View 1 (cartoon, rainbow, N blue to C red):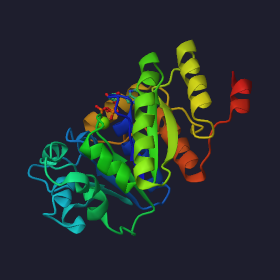
View 2 (view 1 turned 120 degrees about the vertical axis):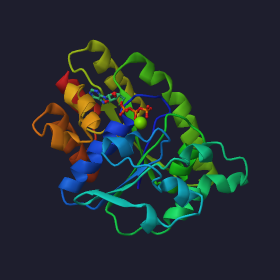
View 3 (view 1 turned 60 degrees about the vertical axis):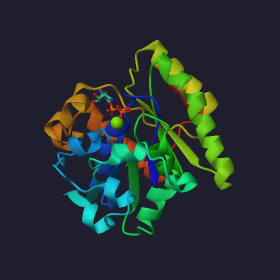
View 4 (view 1 turned 45 degrees about the vertical axis):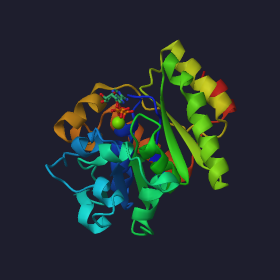
Length: 257
Ligand SMILES: Nc1ncnc2c1ncn2[C@@H]1O[C@H](COP(=O)(O)OP(=O)(O)OP(=O)(O)O)[C@@H](O)[C@H]1O
Ligand SMILES: [Mg+2]
């Protein structure tokens, strides 16, 4: 189970959950994607947004079962939609520490999937906390611009806090998104990430590509919208990285320049 997380907005969390999820499904893995963002971008991007749809909201509120809320959206790919009451959960006042475990408890022992990906909202509130407490691993998308590096210290502090509370490590993976290979700044961001996250930066950077930005508007993944585009190639390669745990090493980078 992997939480796709970064409290910074617009770094490619949803784009990554959607296309990485479909890439893994196309490789024959059984995938569940969870839309944990009240904006419901993942649900919409998969063309699955419906009115009065029960989703992860009612599941977490204890008013529906997993079977009630899960929808099959592609071969091998299931979706737990956001649902219209997800915003309420972000502002939940009661429940104390238990508020953080609603997702973990609601999912129980979901054994039917090879991979579960959670698209988190751009905040570090209760919903993000629920994702972290349910997952052993996080995937952190980082866009190749200067401000992307700034929020990372805060994100790391959140992880450390959770690790201390739970007394277990959360494995962190980093994926570079919106990458411009010819921009010096993007390469600098990549080098800084390698310094800070040795052995954790996945090999494939996701290049900036117009098709990736356009495809959700058609309710399509990149493999349906433009199967031969850079975006499709990159997310296919990223799926292999995730599955094989392929990361960049500093030595490789000094050759690649
Ligand atoms: N590699 C890319 N190339 C071009 N556009 C991209 C790429 N990745 C994401 N985008 C576009 O950038 C915008 C933000 O991406 P996305 O919605 O995936 O980020 P997010 O982190 O989920 O945002 P939020 O924090 O609002 O949930 C979207 O319009 C998306 O289509
Ligand atoms: Mg998003």
